[in-house]
Amino acid sequence: MRSPLVTSKARPPHRRSWTVGAAAAASGVVLLMSLPGALAMAPEDNIPPTSLATLLPATASSTPAVADSEIKTRLDDNGTPAIAGEQLHTAMLRRFYAAHGYEPVWTTRQKQATALWHAVMHAGDHGLDPESFHAAAVAKTLSPSDRDLLLSDAFLAYADALARGAAPSDSKGDSEELSPGPVDAVTALEAALASRDAEAALQALAPSTPQYAALRRAYQTYEAIAKAGGWPHVPEGAAADRYRLLQQRLAVEGFLPAGYATNQLDETTLQAVKNFQERHGLEPADGKLGPATLAELNVTADARVRQLAVNLERLRWLPRNLPADRVWVNTANAQLQLFRGDRPVFTTRVVVGETDKQTPEFQAQIVSLLYNPPWNVPYGIAQKEIIPKLDSEPDYLERHHMTMRGNGSIQQEAGPHSALGRLKFEMPNRFDVYLHDTPQRYLFTRDNRRMSHGCVRVQNPRQLASLLMDIPEAEITKGINVGSTSRRNLPQPIAVFVVYQTAFADSDGVVQFRRDVYQRDNAIAQRLTRSTQAPLAARGAGNQRGG
Image 1: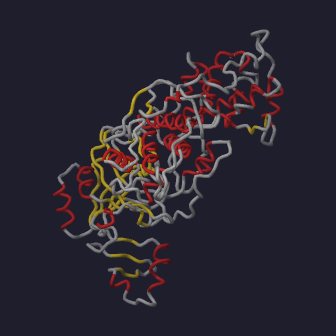
Image 2: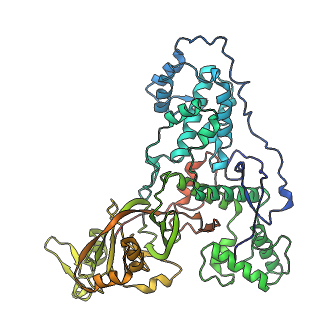
Image 3: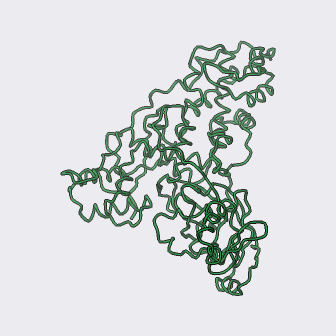
């Protein structure tokens, strides 16, 4: 049973900081049924004028002017120029103004400037902070040249943020290697200037996928909930009004009808708790108010807003045209899906890296299968976990079907005892992370499936192999039963994306939430906003890879 949803086109008041409020998406906004009546939407407030006519002086003549020496001088400065305390993206600005003879651009393009500025002021629609794009600085007392530069920088930076993500690629962690590919913000801004609708052209740089649209709608919903005061805290222990507060909490997100109140854990409330648990990946979904369920219930609405903003950013890191056929591994959800024609046709559980041996985020291609693979133990694992045991356990290698090779490396023989099981999906990548079988089948029954050294163990590997090879599963088993190590190339390599999405839309379009076990969200949240934030969690340490 899904939480009830209704459609509304109301827009919550825009706020400059995405942590507590951003303007809603322009249409198709999905609001949870139980949003209180207090959310009757007021006109947008606190937005600097979207028309820049009062800030941009009209040009007296359309005759080309001599190159503005102030603009060129500023951009030729060897340092990092700043205006009103705002750092500029000098390299992009130099290219942009070189194409315009280093003349002011926006005094002769006030219509386009107004449209583009309107887009910047609604950056909150994408979970971005308008203050990151000089929202306040532009309205300060500035020289015409300084304002022109600041506007250009705002438009270029916003274009780049929509196209590639607001977090610079060089600031991402070692575990984050997804990218939409090269995007030229300067070219994109020139195209917007040449289009009939400059704002629409700029906004089109953002992802257009159903996933992104669903998260934007959810972002607006939770932003409105946060603005209305969030939800009540559910007491961890016995309290006279515990179930009344629980029912109010569940009603805010639509798991119970608005106003539902019995102050007891009746069947309706029990089912609502189960639905909440399913939506947050809590196992088992039994309706009990255990520590994990209470922890999720008491995550604040503001924290959910930040979580959605972070995952909108992660979607901006992905290629704009995802392959219709792909393997998708969400390590936050410990689940794998195979897509054919953009539709999920197979889903299975996976085991992913431990918190101190995290599975990275990256894109690769599965090119072949390896039947009965031996396990070449990574050097780090051998040195830290195996070699130290040999003095006290001289038969350790023999007991684990391992041999020390001439170069000092360790290999575990193929067969039923191999840590890779009977099947390995070969997908070359710099992390040396891959999908594989495992003899430890019991791990797939656990709620916590973060038990590997970084690789991804697949619950139903033969079924996945059958679908990738387009042959019956019996043929896969037959090849394995030969017993020897052998390789089978896929008819066509298939893209595999290993992602970490703590908020995502399921196949029904319902947004799901997962705990930030790897503690990666906070680092992204801090890069998305210039506003003061309470940290979501401490940044996790160590991302060791392995088998």
